[in-house]
Length: 232
Image (cartoon, rainbow, N blue to C red; front, side):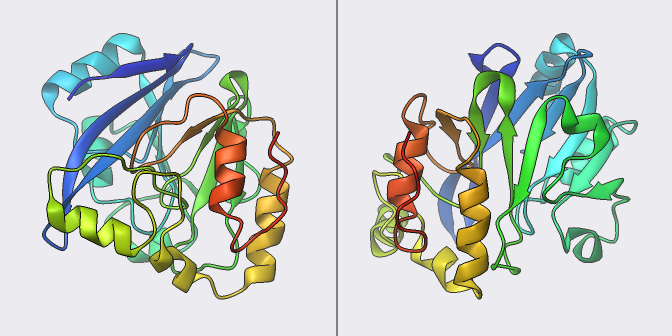
């Protein structure tokens, strides 16, 4: 596990998590703000070696838990960097009462993040409660479970599961997430807002990064719930 640089002030680190007995790749995205401090989006399990890499880049100042499911390693990161501010998706502070959150993310970023990020809640799916983030400087949209892009897995069971969900070897929204959408009109409105942003790269928590053409790939993946989204 080590950092991989994607752009100026943008890195990621990948690991593996067992979900229902199936191995699933997961990704943490790391951004450096204008003051030199780091923002960790969806922290993975961080060992001493990875922590040393992060500390060499700058002080870890912000931790983001972008939905109600990506919080398993948040406590470990908060203990390792106790002065870092902690931001969670709507509903997460009530779910993780063992953590003290500095605020809840939504359609406007908190002031300490606003120079680096735009944020928007993927509305209409309260069980997921996912917040999408745009790093403006690199034109990178960061999502969590909104879409997958898994092309390789060592587990046949994982491959079968992804195929059944329509999310194998392409940028795709899983059938499971579509089931969680309770208000499609609200979901579409929130996506229309996000697609007004200027982004080309697409980072997701599960699967390969789309370095260019990310807006078109995401529009194609979301056409079942929001047809006609702009592709450029």
